[in-house]
Image (cartoon, rainbow, N blue to C red):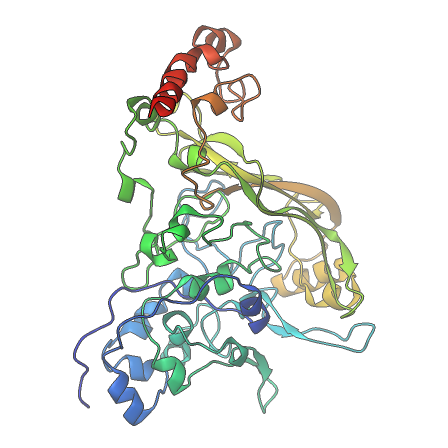
Length: 470
């Protein structure tokens, strides 16, 4: 069979989601690209999934099975208290934002609710396969199940991607493998990524509360898309360091990759970059869910289904908290957050979104218990979900007691230039930074004028005078 002339430029992140998630996403689709060099072949032979793509990209599907987007887990050497020989992530991790994972919340049909309705649901609806070949599966069937177009097509029909029952009663995820979708292959746009990443955790903008659009992010305003920063190689996606986001492909992305460590025209600002992360000044807001209660579920009057009680905020509507972070993670049953200190020269001050989750802990061990959402989704019975998850995990004699867990999320989007924190905003009595909490003594704060207009007044006034003269 004739090989195609040249390959696509740029490997990209893979996302997946149910059509309801796609419908909620305000993000734009992939920008129009030059016609894919394989279009003539597709028009003549149709699109048959990864086997068609591999006419030009041999071995890509098999390699993709080794990435985080397929496995939903990786080794996490920067997280304390976990087995360094094992992999952790959405596949198996338990924490109070999701309070479940792919293992206990595998895609399945819920029991019928009070209105006699049931639905197919599960954490792994956001998996770029067909569910018959599920998270971390390998082999020829798994390779054939990869949904390449989900990320690469700007004309993907998300209504075709949904949980369905097969003839033999299994639960599968259908895909859009149409010629129309295959002929629109190119660099993925924001929607290709945000279909999953915006909708994770229970609905639009819940988990991180960032909207990647021109109104909320300076990069989006310039027409950039996710993969302009998260530049992948062999489908391995660079990520930043996040106390909450453990699984990764072993490659990292940082603001300095593009902007360098002296990005300002002002030497005073550049002097800050050694100990203050770019995000601290350029992402002064956050949003999304601030708290969830998995011990108490709320019923939707229209559908009859239940959801964990959630308090959420709009994007860019809340203030982050600031802490030292050296890239390693403190991982306790009731706290997941950054490790670092002023004395640690590898640490910088970063902004974080604070989330608090109420869930069930085991009275005997103190460990957080996972929850199978099928039962409480139908009936609101949270303890039935805990019992089902314990059975799946082989846990016996668990004694559930309610408790709270605090999680620090990295605040890495909603980037602004015009509304960035400036000298006069940080160094004042009621500024966003709590210098004492960050390790500065009262005497040092006074001596260095860290909370005083005396530190910046003359310089700022000179700038204002120059503007007026101009």
